[in-house]
Image 1 (cartoon, helix red, strand yellow):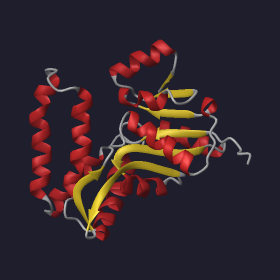
Image 2 (image 1 turned 180 degrees about the vertical axis):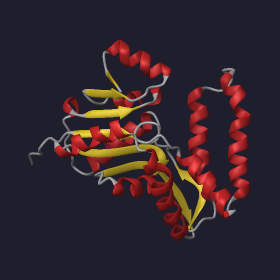
Image 3 (image 1 turned 90 degrees about the vertical axis):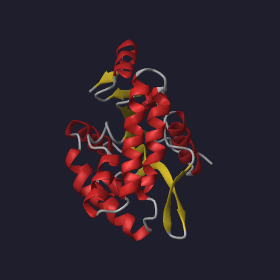
Length: 227
C-alpha cells in the first residue's frame, strides 16, 4: 500500500503556545474551591524546598522538572472524572486561552491553512490538552496520561511522563499507530525548552520560541529560527 506523505507542525504547550502554567491554574482552582488543599500545599512546598538544591547543582534540572510534572497528578487525587472535566474546561477557558501567544498562534493557523497536521504535545495531562486542542481545532493532542481507579484520578501518572526523549517516542508511536507517513524534513516543531531538543531535531524546520539559555545558544549555533 502506498501512503501519501504528510507534513506536521508540532507545538509544545506551556511556555510555547501559552504563557500560563497548568500547575498554577489547578492550584488556584483548588484553593478557590477548597478542594485537595493538603496535596496542593505539599506539592508546592516540596518543590519550593527542592529549589535551592537544584540551583546549587545538587539536583539536575531534568530531574527537577520531571518531579514537577510527575507530582502534578497529586493535585487531582480523588477527583472523579466528571468533576475533572469541569476543571479542565475551566483551566482551558479561564486560565490558559487568555495567555495564548498570538505570534505563535498565527504560525499555527498558517500551518493549518497550508494543510499541515497540527500536534500539540506536552508533559501536561492528556485530558487537559485534549480540551484545549478542541478550542483551537488542533488535530491531535499528546500528553501525560493519568491513572484512574474506580472512576477517580489516583494522583499518579501512567508512565512515562511525556517529556524529553519520551515525548518524541510518543509522537513516533502515535504516527506509526495511525498509519501516518510523515515528511519530517518539511515539517515544523516549536518549543521554548532545551529539553525539547529531541523534538526540534526530529524535523527540518525547528523553531525556538522565547527559548531558555541553553536552547537559545543551540538555536543560534545551528542557525535555527527564533521567535
